[in-house]
Length: 223
Image 1: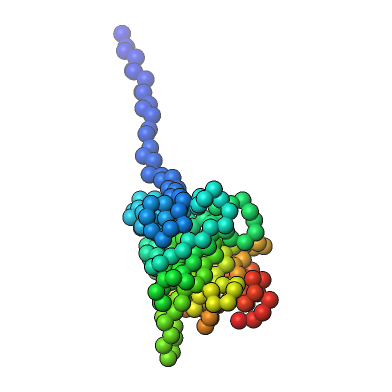
Image 2: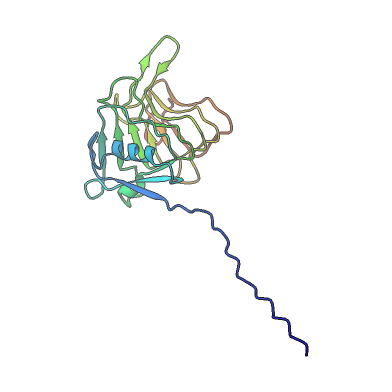
C-alpha cells in the first residue's frame, strides 16, 4: 500500500519594512527673544533632533496676524534640515506676517544661518541685521546665509527693510550648492532695501527664479 506524500506547506514571507519617520513639528508661540515657545527654543530643539528627516517649525503667535520677533542676539546656526513655515501664522496670502527683526542684535549678527541642508524658509520677513564693515568686505549682517550641506529652498520671503535704516547689510548670501531662491508665480522673494548687496552667490548649481530685487517692496527702484 503506497503512502501519499504530504503536500508542501508554504509559509508566508515577512518582509522587513524600512523605518519611516513622520514630519516632526515645533510651534513658535512667543515673539520673545528667548524662552519657552520662542523661535530660538524651536531652532535649538530642531538642532538636537537627529532622527527626523525634516523638522517643521510653525507659528501661532498671539492668535495669528502680524508678529515681530524682536531679537537681542543672533539665533543659533541651524544644523539640521528644517522647514520654517511662516505661512502657518495666518491664512493671509499677502506680505509675510512673521518678521524676524535684528535691529537690537550686535553688529555682525546674521538673521538665519542655515547649514543643515535640505531646508525651506517660506513667507518670513528678515530685517535689521547690520554688518561690520572692513576695507574689502562686510562681516555678518546677512538676512539669510545658506552654507553647509546645500539643497535649500527660499520662497515667498521678504529679505530686507522697506523703511529707512531697517535693511540688512546683505540680503541673501549663498555659500552652498543646489539652492533654489524663488519659485513660480507668487513664490518669489523680495530681496530689497539692503546695504552692500541684495544677493551674493558664491556656489554652484543654484537656481534663482521669480525674485524681486530693489529698494521698494516690489523692487521698483534698483539697489
